[in-house]
Image (cartoon, rainbow, N blue to C red; front, side):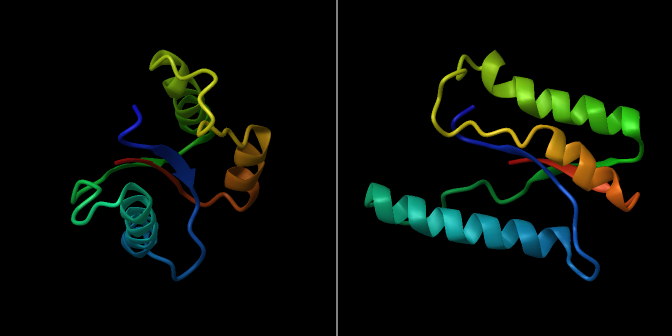
Length: 103
């Protein structure tokens, strides 16, 4: 679990998933390498995504993301953060698609 992340994200109009993931990976890899005193590739090249097409799928995906750290025995790990109900409200607000990513 500590070597990947799960996130639910809605994109702004004109924004691409590829550009957003690239920005996240680029920034976090540079910072992690700086902190660790290492160089080179940090994240795997590809990522998995799943398009959410309805409320039931959204609820399932949010539940999966929330429960994943617990299943990996990271209940009190300081890097676990869950937005909670805000994620449901934001994702459902405009009826747009939401993606759940794994990298």
